Amino acid sequence: MTSEADALHDDLPVQTISVGNDAQRRDIAVRVRSGKGRPIVWLGGFRSDMRATKALALDAWALQHGRPLVRFDYTGHGVSGGRFADAVISNWVEDALAVLERFADDRPVLVGSSMGGWVTCLAVRKRLAEGRASPAGIVLIAPALDFTHDLMWEAFPAEVRTEIERNGVWYRKTDYAPEPDPISLALIEDGRRNRLLTGPLDLRCPVHILQGMNDPDVPYAHALKTVERLPAAGTLLTLIKDGDHRLSRPQDIDLILRSVAAIA
Image (cartoon, rainbow, N blue to C red; front, top):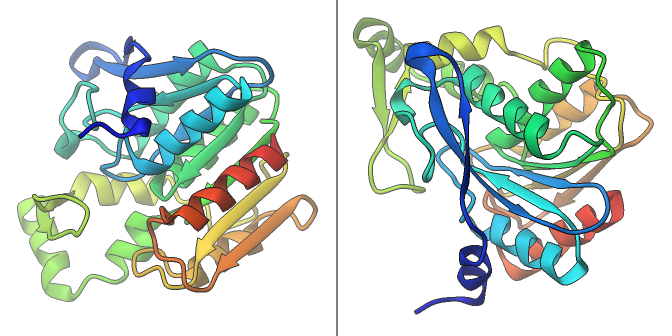
């Protein structure tokens, strides 16, 4: 059975851009919906893709309101090239930077979900350091900044840490995919080099965070820590008391869309 969201997804052709050099070169899949106004860019989560429920809902909203929207799959995700097990945060940030450069260079509105929140903030920081303009605004959904260190490594029991250090990888069962997540030593070490919550984080634009208080993967205390690092002016936090990590219920989707509309 084909849903309305799938039909909207399927009417857009997949474009590809080449990212990386030599052995690191891979094709990144992108879908672009045309429209008027500043482009909106969806940055998905760990092992998610541009067919995820929230991404398709945002695409339907963009079509309805005539807004340009860019969605893409990171390396090793969805229909993009590369192996997920070989990729790290820096690769996914490189993907995001290439997509922004090619499709949304004019002060976009960025919508980052879970790991996509971390990728969003890292990409914005890199662009600001290069003298680029700040985004028009950012919406972060259960943002998982520094998750490989704060929510993985720091929470792993000693035997899991030992297995990662000895074997280079540990396979973690997950509720979000039929096969376990490969948590590599390279992922952990790269995450350490990309931590953002160790000091102030000024993204020079309005930031609205949406966070479920019943989130088992990114506790809302982590969202509070993120808020503490952001400037007081322009930062808004909305807590959904019965919200989980997915925030994909109809009422959650409605809140996300209203938040994007407001910040856009």
